[in-house]
Each structure stands twice: as structure tokens, then as C-alpha cells.
Image (cartoon, rainbow, N blue to C red):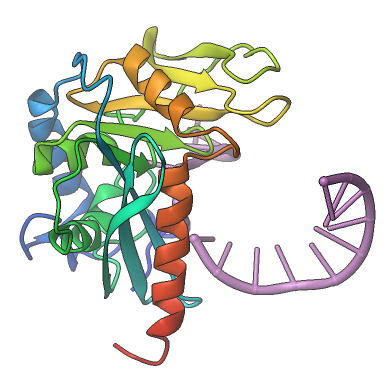
Length: 241
DNA sequence: GCGACAG
DNA sequence: ATCTTGTCGC
């Protein structure tokens, strides 16, 4: 049963990312409100991590099957030094603001496949820049205990002005009067990305880490390699599961 | 009340 | 997220 904008009050047979317990939308929101206090939004976090992990999920056409991937890169050379994947089903309907409940189980399974423990997680989605200040990056960080950064391709909450047109230019992302992230230009003349803190990280450091991961493309190398891996995994497992 | 809404 | 048709550029 798929639930999206067209069916916001949807069925109750969803389940949570930590166990296998059915959760309603209201209950999932309550989980976020409860876990929020456990996120470290100050850091400052590692300024010179040895390894950085990217996480991403790809969906089959019907949206009934997914593949999650984690790639671990040498932070210096940006070479992939470890990988982990998992295939399965979305654990929750698509509800903006409740993303973690959809992708977290598969991402955690992929993380379990790693042979090394990365020093930083780069998540495909927001962290603090979330309606209840607890996006996927915060959830992943709190659950794993690892420093985490959220890098979104489009905004979920907040407003901003600018940023300038050059790589490195940025502007505060403000929601309800508070700075929840930064709109960052990672390439000259290319639309910006939305950086926010997930866990055990400060915003300034998060921006620096993202710039270090975007020497050539708009999106971090971590995200790009994880995207390639989950897509390849989805294709390789087509007709399975 | 209505629209908007990470992936 | 995924699909879709074409276009521009290295």
C-alpha cells in the first residue's frame, strides 16, 4: 500500500525503523520528537576524517522494491575502499518529513555489510533542516552513533537569499526564524545543494566537508558512488525478491 | 481552508 | 524516487 500526498491519512500497517512494529504517521512523528534530544548538533565533528561514507537508495519502477547502498571513500583520494548493499521493500509510505522510516532499515542493513566503520556519514536528504528538526541524517547519526551530515538536492523547509554564483558561495537556510542549514553552491553557476547538520557535527564543518567532496560535480562523490552502487544492485537483482 | 512537501 | 524527449557540450 503506497501512501503519498494523495492519501496523507493512510493505512496503519507501516512499521518503524528500529524494530518491526507498525507505526502510524502520528506515532512516527512522536518517535522523531523523542529521539531529537539525542542528536548532537554542535560537533564540531571530524575536520580531517580518514574515511567518509555515502548512503543512497534506488527504487524499482513500481516502488515496491529497493536497493540501499553505502560506499566508503578514502577522504583524501576519494577512492572507494569499502561497500555495503541491501535489497528489500520500503518500510514506510513516502511521507515528506518521515523519510527515515522508509529508508532507514535498508540503509542500516547496508551499513552492517561494511567491513570498516566510516568516520562520517553523508546522507542523501536533510538533517536539521526538517519540520521537526530530525531528518534522515539526524536519525542515521543517532542510531549509528556516527557523525552525520545531510545533503539535500531540493529544500524541504526554510527560505534563503542568494547564494552567489561561485563554488563555495553560500547562504543561511532559515526556518521559523532559526538557521537550520546552509544553501551551498558546490560548482560555479550550478544550482546549490542544501547542507544541514545530522549528528556530532557543526554547520561550518559540514559545509567544509561537502566542499571537500565536490571537486568536480555538484553532488558529493560519496553520494554519486552510493547512487551508482544501489542502481547497479537494483538492476542485478531484478526479478528477484 | 488550501497548497507545499527530502527521496 | 522513476519515467520521459530532446539538446548541448566535452
